[in-house]
Image 1 (cartoon, rainbow, N blue to C red):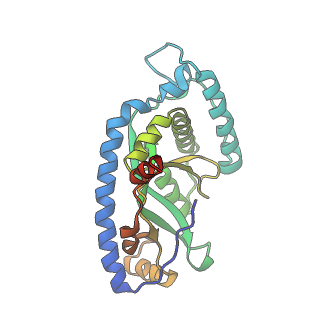
Image 2: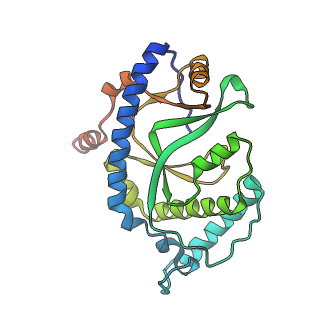
Amino acid sequence: MAMTPVKEIDMQSMGRIRQASQKISAFLHQRLNGYVQTLTPLFAPRKVLGEYMESAFKDKVPGADGNFIEIEETYKSIARDTFEIPAKLITPIANIKNQIETYPWEYHYSIADDAKRPVIITSPVRWVLSYGGAYNLSDLLDQQSEGEMPEPDDLKQLMIRSLTLRKLMDLSPSIQQMLEDLRFPVRVETCDATGAMPIVVVSADLPTFRPQDDLIETVIQLSGKAVFEELIDLDAIDSLADPFKAKIQTLIG
């Protein structure tokens, strides 16, 4: 995960930038959800897992054997090394509904290198792309912040959904290309909370930053919650590149 830059600002500036960031973020998230819902039929998990997933359809899916072996090997490694839960994967696995969710990308951050005080930082321009489920990355981060132990079954379902979507994206470069053409590039990332578990993240190419730690700490003390949202760098918006224009310019030399 790329490091978020730090920019020193005062409380008055933060209020103005924060309000603008939230408006931009809401607009972008609404637009992204519209695109994703239109593309949902392309995300069918059975295209990856075939007969290895519970389904009303019984026909074999070409490549499902190899896909499942790859997913199973990665699943076992993450279950054992990151979460220390039973690594056995019984087939057929529970049905994964072809229902795509997007929710803000979050990560733990420690103020002044104090690991005992993790703050959950949210990005206004990055979203996790995930098959719908009762338990997601945000729930895991909340539990870890509270010192709670996640249920093994919750972790299992989260891993399977994440690994299946990652594999589908690998097999479907056209989906990635469409989203990138719509100015929402797709990347696969990891975070400390999930070890090597791949997380599909969709971003808007707008630069963000965190203010200095003492300002974050002031906001946390005022709100009473150890959460904070990155801010969009409004000064950098005018210098954003146009990938489509750049590609056309390349073609004509």
